[in-house]
Image (cartoon, rainbow, N blue to C red; front, side, top):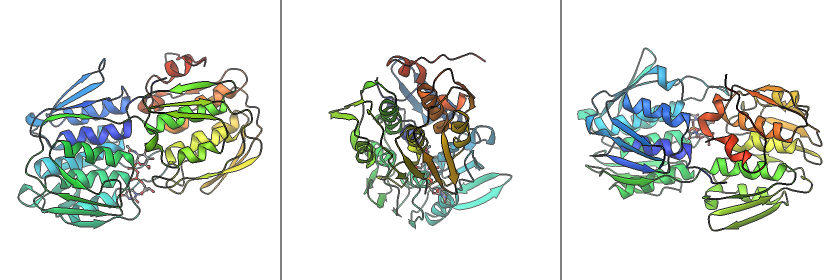
Length: 407
Ligand code: UD1
């Protein structure tokens, strides 16, 4: 099974393309609804977007950009559209971008993004649900900002805003996630001057121009982790994942080893064989390199089958547990207490109809359905298509039986 390009790393690269003096081609861009949504957001500015799905190459030509707006209609569909604020501020010195609003698992504020833009010299106003950001004389001077907590989205947005600033910008307590590192490394190949990506302090020396060129997206670490968990929990599996980047998994690999499954990592392939018995292993999410919040629902799903009691604690998004009542519908024994899910294992799951509530919840329900006796129907799979490329084809190729029923 081949791991696709990362969704969360592709979106910042797409926004970064708007900073360039000419067309930028991005390799390894997955065919996902979130990518299509962001293509629309970018096209709204007048930039030209062409997507070769066969080759998974996306080319963005910002030279025709003449509308520095990201409308509510699109931003509400995908929060990452808020990256347009940093990109447009960096590219043109002004932006009008809808505030994203809440999401399925809580308020998800953008205060750090806005405070950071201000610290870099932008003027920020609110108007009718929109953020209006302006740089003095259309170019940010740059500045210094310490964020707390460390936010992936705010770090990306601030890097985008600062790359073409007049002076130096510093982000302290910056996110260290691979998505940030990938963005900074790719921008540097196009002439940006960013140092410290992957550490808590990122320094950006402003530059007059970002070159046109070709950049590359990284493999999806969350898809990799999802399939590792699926292979570990489904009896009899023996799955080889290709095009992976193990170093991006952070401490997840060490936690995964506690399952005592067969795990072999060779170059860019990861082979996982099902555990004979799944031991209870409790996890707590943390910023990179800690256990990713984007894998906690899948882990909790696996733990419903473990030989004992475990807990899953989310410190990043304390409300991200909408999957719990759905797993209960499948016969799992788990209960949420604040930001902790207590899971009593040894469940024999039984098929039922369940409802997807968000991207990671929906893949977890598919995984639970595969482990369950009988048929499981997962509704609202549009959540799944936001972030997993042809999930049913990939899983069916390794022995699953999943049908997509047209609505
Ligand atoms: C990104 C990922 C998402 C992942 C999350 C955490 C994308 C498109 N999405 O989301 O899949 O679950 O990182 O790894 O890449 N916060 C504030 N104020 C802000 C911004 C964030 O308080 O202005 C808080 C959040 O509420 C949260 C924490 O910071 O508790 C981390 O959130 P953040 O890293 O910003 O997540 P996203 O970038 O939105």
